[in-house]
Image (cartoon, rainbow, N blue to C red; front, side):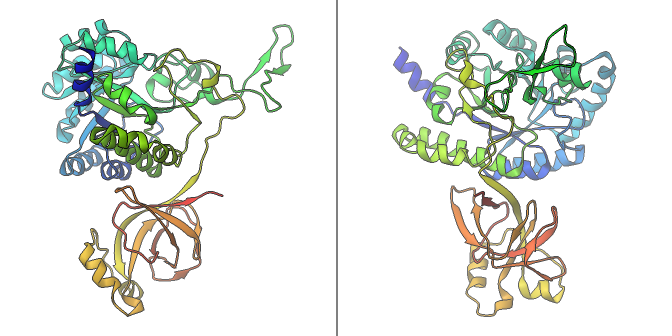
Length: 449
């Protein structure tokens, strides 16, 4: 019976759900392997400091995603106060234009309003609702929810028990990668108490990453560090969750959607995580042996985005002291994000001042172009620079199809066609020659020494 259940679960096709902080990052997530993307609007989401989306950007993002067979979910998962309720009606009415595939909600009042205003839109219950048992799942199912996100405090055994005790058509979504919160399923009062910014309203200042000391009651102002080593200790600072090496266990547990945390992350982070989990899921579905043989590759690739060391969280039991980072609150960072390819132009046209960027250059066009002898007829590729790089540097092209291509920067030009030795200005639009053909949405990055 257990063997039959495992075969059935392996045949499930879990969704890879990736976060996006902006329209650009949404498109990167789609191209690099997401099955679905979740985004926040300018209201009612739990990432107030993220760039977030206007209604117009949401419409464009949904259109782009749907053209590529990818779903888009919109977060509205704040814990609402009285003052929020009237505005929720207006907000959900605006979302009628967007036509998202689902809404992610935690507050029962917001849930009720969403059902009233958008009765045909799926609702997923956020992890903020503290969904720790199958009774809660069944409650939300009876209210009309299609999916519930598990609390992060659950083990795989508990999730399996939930799967056994809920309707088969009800979906389970679970975080498998990203930052871990010190509080219970994200419900934190530290930020509100210490900085006046409410984490449950989307304004968290992340005090769990701060460095703390002890003050004795009768000695105010006398700070005594809690030493882990000579640098002190960060007593609330958790390692990041990473389940890339445990995809079989995740799928066998009956989880329908594998969710990545990070709606404030860069395009490089999103591309790296999306591509690596896409590889792992697809390899496992094809052949478990292929997945197991590729584990070193997944480990190597997932470490190329920023992270705070890795842990498996609560999946295999209660975390212990080894899941905390005591000596630093900084990220590990192996690569620097340089830019994203967004169109191309012939060098002769740029130097002549001819406007017009070409997108989606075909292989045939590019191969024919690269075979020409005229130096001024090579293709230059447009990027919006994110960090400094220079002519002569060795950098890397990251492609959605698993390839990483090492190249040298041969030429850099600005929008006026002026040749540059380096690109020191963030957000500057540049045209580069790396000696190889590239495509829209290729990521340019540099390995840190």
